[in-house]
Image (tube, rainbow, N blue to C red; front, side, top):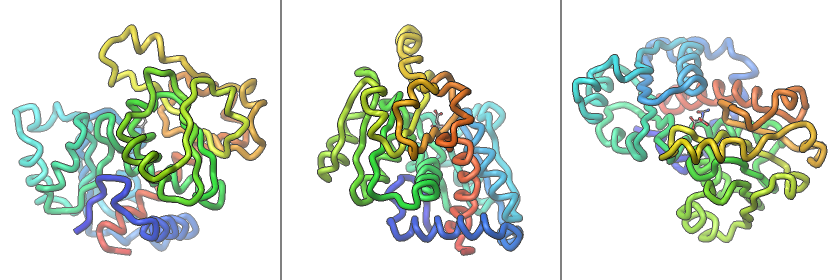
Length: 304
Ligand code: NCD
């Protein structure tokens, strides 16, 4: 039985296999509409979500499966003090696969030790978000035709942004990748990503504060929201929240073939005017997230 807890849980070959399956699904959705007919997915969301939860649920529905779950743990026995292991054992005895999002880092991994069915980390605190990474990699592969030989700028809250941590880890396995880490000093990428991933593997990266200074060198610009919910005091959040606002003026400095990604939700970091620029692919990215999750559910359930 396989879980997906960390972006490195699948090898590059397995990812390629999963992405090819997503390609097939996009080409011919009809032939997949019954493949999970007798299967049930549970979504256990202990933190807010729009895209991740809905895309998981719709993915399962489009595969012919069914869905149960909660988006507000206040309505479940969590409120009575039930532990994660007991909740997972219980839900795992009713369903075939579980997606869990939790504010505590490491909670999905801990849950996986007790899960009788495949379990997916749908985001754990400021730590990892591997299914967003599948979505991001697939979007890059679709728009650039490859995931190698790229200069990627990650901009915004690199400290608390779990999608950034997972994407850097995952992309560090591909050939000839260069990372440009754009953030205020206070929101730089955690030390462990630098020492255990970038420095350890000798992957080129720079840390810089001004987006304008590097935007012209990028193949991909991955914008992120300042993660309000992870700040200890509101004054810091207010001071840092509008550190970056990508607009048409700044985009004049960028390459013609830049791809702009964002895991969403956006707050102020990308002006709405940018949405009409052909380089903005974040709404395509949203849609790819559903197809990638369809492929992932199939792989973990062993129906592909
Ligand atoms: C991200 C998350 O939850 O980490 N959202 C998502 O799943 N697409 C990014 C964010 O909340 O900023």
